Length: 298
Image 1: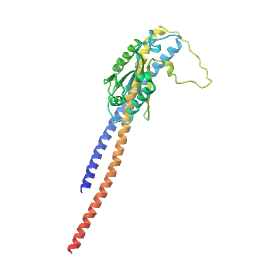
Image 2: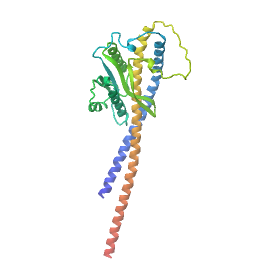
Image 3: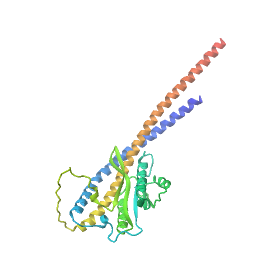
Image 4: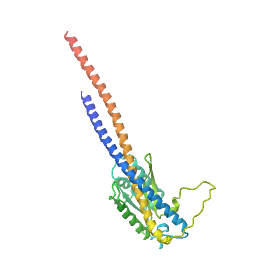
């Protein structure tokens, strides 16, 4: 009898867990839809701004800018690379955090300058991992949450731009999850500063195809345009990285909770079969004892 009681408790516990994971899956699905809409809506602006900076930088001749070539006076002797890692505040999102953090750790091992540089973290889930791997976090950002506001990202980007132009940091890189589609998210290391749009030209023409080089006349001057467009492009790229990270987190949580719900359902059926077999054996034993007792009396 004790065995059947334990099985009944397990059946009830698994059913409760399944209801919880099903609810979390529904919440993650709703949040994913909203986050995906924000990410997709901001991408055309980011791509258009990036393309404009590409055309401007490519068609303006030898025009230079501190955000592209570095500060005019050079970086300071004690300047270090800055790496920003985007993790999540909450868990139960499958391999999302482990993929991002392992990518960051792999990058640190391959790049000693980044390993000895300044590391900043967004989210709470990366703290223990980085501490265990002896990576010192200079600053943890907790102001962004599930819906990063553009003003907060703008303030962070302006801080990085000012420190880079002043020569306090030699480079700024962002380790985050890049959202490609609902079925594919890839951890990526993006160089935010120095901002080199020519490095992102990933649409080469066919072999042997000749391309005409357009000539532009700028008004105002290219330097003045770059002073406005480059900071805006840096902010847009950083904001897009935040949006991609959020939507990727919700996708991972949605998939993880669906898998947990399915597994709980399978386990519930398995335990129910075990309970039915145990109950049937118990009833058979009781009937056998009754019949044996009656035969002994008769």
